[in-house]
Length: 222
Image 1 (tube, one colour):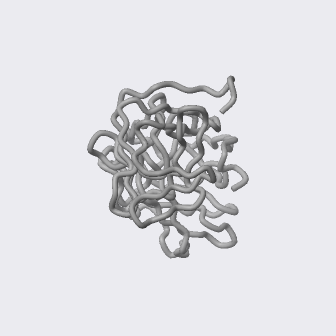
Image 2 (cartoon, helix red, strand yellow):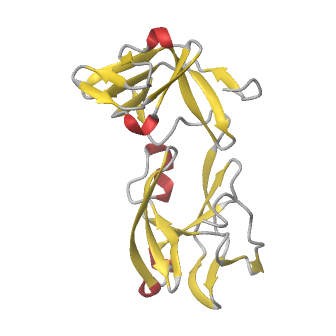
Image 3 (cartoon, one colour):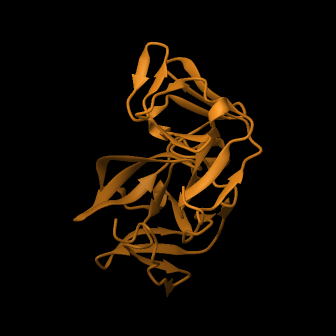
């Protein structure tokens, strides 16, 4: 953890579980932005209740998690995905800690949104929900009744987001995983339940008849 890495102490109580046991319980967790897009938690070593070996293994009861910890001075980084549960206060979190400087707003709109792929209109709606998420382009969630579902091919892909929940995907023609849906989003994102969203970066998107420039984002080349 270099000197230029952004970090700050969080006011949230953080608890971590693995193998049915409490691994850590901290009232002074440190958010560290190891990469620009989201933070991870480093916990004071005194708040880590499990044994951490010199090789970075985490031993809790009769369970050993190889290489699941990194110690930097008096802080310990626990591998998020290696643990069974992470709690902020009494609520579970998923994928990675939420960035306190990132905001998600979902607004109902009457703007006309049209999606074209390879010149063909795949969706057209005048009742979108527009999701504004810090550092990402607006996302236009459309009712399935406004989407030509016969053109969508189900995909086995799923992804998880700490703000919205777990998404499943469709492909269109040769374009893999270009449409997604949150069927059971997290409580703060309920307004997009069961609505389809297309990657702005990969389709021709028209809003009120005006073609939108394809944005550059971490998903542009994904």
